Image 1 (cartoon, helix red, strand yellow):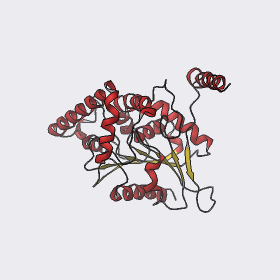
Image 2 (spheres, helix red, strand yellow):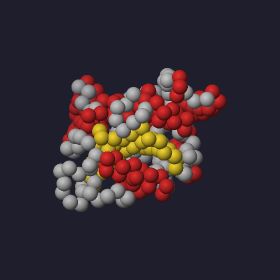
Image 3 (cartoon, helix red, strand yellow):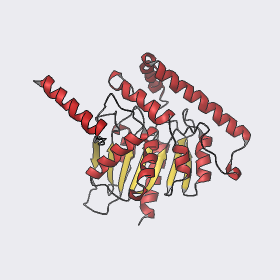
Image 4 (cartoon, one colour):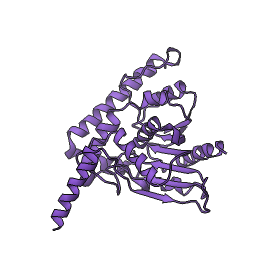
Amino acid sequence: MSHQVSHADAILSRTLHNFLRLPYLLHAHIQEPATKNKRATTVVLLHGIGDNTDTWEPIVRRLPKSYRVISLDLLGHGQSPAPQRQQYNVAVQARAVAATLLRKGARKNLIVVGHSMGALVATELAKRQSHSIRAMVLCSPPLYPQGETRLPTEQKAPTSAKSRAATQEKRLIALYTYLIDNPDKLISIARRVRSLGLLGQEFSVDDTYLIPFIASLRGSIINQTATRDLCGLHLPFTLIHGRYDPVVIRQYLRDVAMANPQSRFREVYAQHGISAPHYARAIVQEINHYAAASK
């Protein structure tokens, strides 16, 4: 009987999400304001690839208790659905985020904070429904334009800087492609990366989430338009990155900051993970900055 129910659920899920294109609903951890306030600042937190809502703990405990804080497990991560046959691109993720926020009554004046891949999802969300977002804080966004974005001539970086950025980008894309082509080695490499603290302590990959991880790496990180999208975005946002981050190309963040007058740029003494005290404080400062600006 349980097998039949499971099979029926699978058929229903495919019908709703694959054929009718109904967005998935994500697992949400919500911290309500200490005092009920319909006008309370709402902060939405989107983690990176291989992470979950736990990654935001150093941030959440530093935020004012007057905020409403919604942390989401992205599709294929944490306690959210992890469909095996899914593209896991930022469009799919952003639709799931939007549907979940609507269900939770978070419809406007949102401060959206994204880390790593979550920053790319936040960018896609802003592109689709900027009317609901007050501002964004994008932490360590892995921007890889792969030659698709042309900035105004006067804002272009020196040739040497562009060359270094392009070389770093090619090496990173080659690494990601290798991991996709060699999934048997991905888990062991991910464990090594975590032990070194390069991508944060919450980062992990196991057999359960291997397929979503690979699909996310291919669909959201390698194939992206975030650099172009951020250059044309018409809402305030901050780009923050760790000075010693191995997967973020600083030059591309600076290019975006120069191209979009509504952006802010910050560099902190950290790597990719956001739990380092300098990084956590910077994120909270930016959130509070945008919260205060709206009052």
